[in-house]
Image (cartoon, rainbow, N blue to C red; front, side, top):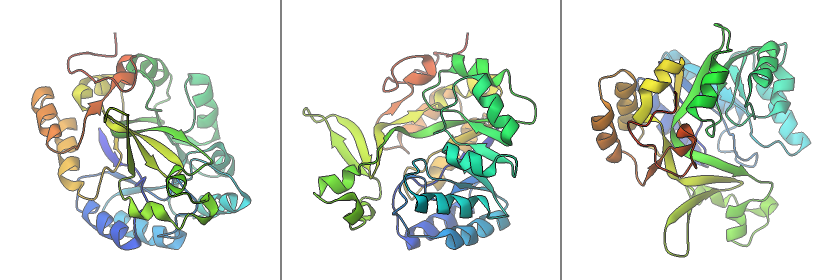
Amino acid sequence: MKLALGPVPYYWTAERLHAFYDTIADTDVDIVYLGEQVCSRRHSLRLPDWLSLAERLADAGKEVVLSSLILVESESDLKSLRRLAANGRFRVEANDMAMVQLVAGHAEFVIGPHVNVYNPASLGLLIEAGAVRWCAPTELSAQALAGIVSTLPATVACEVIVLGPLTLALSARCFTARHYNRQKDDCGFICIDHPAGMPLTTQDGQDFLVLNGVQTLSAKIHSLLHDVGSLRRLGVAVARVVPLGENMAPLLAHVRARLDGRIGDDTGQDALAGLVTGECCGGYWNGLAGMQAGVSGVRGTP
């Protein structure tokens, strides 16, 4: 099973991003997704900078995929998508149907987890358009995923997010700007002061959500590392990790060892607790509420 690293969801400085990917180049990661998914106002790196970074990672032996915006709101956003689609070098990940339309019939692409694909018929249409890999939405259970994966042609790979916060919502309103009583169009790029997002707790002090500009994330970390066996039996070809911070090398090494079977279920869970801050969840995989724990030994497939 290949290991992929998703795009950084937070707003980091250019220096922070370059330093981060310098360390990723030396990790045992097979696929790296690059680019700004969340907010078109974030410009630490422009497309030429991302392409330069992509070349460096490709030289380090990584498959590089350029990720597109999840929420497309304006003509300027569409222009950015067109430039991304026409990069001529790297495969793109379509996170919105606008990007699918731009690449359909012209280039192979990856279907991102934010495109609403929940049945074989929808997936089949995207495969006809040129999709060669599909990253499943995190809310799919193992049983639902099994029914879709069984219909995939041999030329199309299934990818699953195995570790990272859940994207719960994307909004036209920026909640980080709102917190500072600013308008979205005059936000002052305040997200850059929150490199891990803004935690939101309930009235009784329970960690609940993380505000990341227009994106709302779960405070708990979605993890399927307790059930790598089911992923393998389902035929999942790629396991994706969403960046949780800047020091990802030890965590990625742990995930790689877990996927390779060098760390077992129980040992793997104990070791993971020392690498991830906060609680983990995995309820969706077992057909439960997403915020519930993924219990080792509970299998989502019959």
